[in-house]
Length: 167
Image (cartoon, rainbow, N blue to C red; front, side):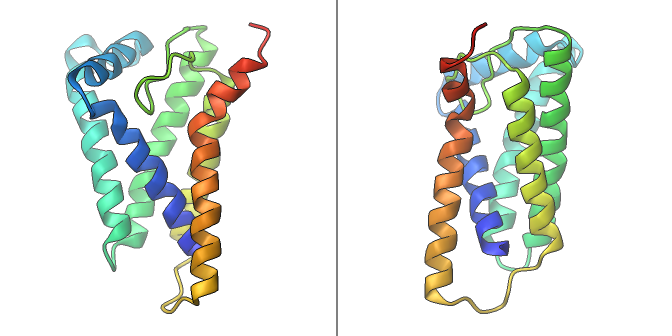
């Protein structure tokens, strides 16, 4: 479970860094933070930079030996903030595109809240269940396949749900 949790969280946070892959993506992400209206205008850019730096830090702490718990705690903290952001934005009726993974135009809604809460749970489980010192090859392969599938599902969940939405 520990390896699968780690691989899933790393996959999600690497994908999330797509918001900084180009100037256009970064500006879209900054605009989405502004549109959430949860931080004062003067803190929009610092918040965007903090999120991106935090995502990079999560990835590195989870891939470096000996820092797993710290990485999971950082991931859980960020995912808690993301969950609350999605929840407040949804409850306030704001139709802001989620730039969580870069270019999505799907507005934040209940799917994002559930996705983030699920990922938060995975990060908390990862922090609570230490990885075994030695891995069997079959277990590693199964964990990485499961984490890859989970990452893909989480990345495209909102887009998939929006296909069947009546809104």
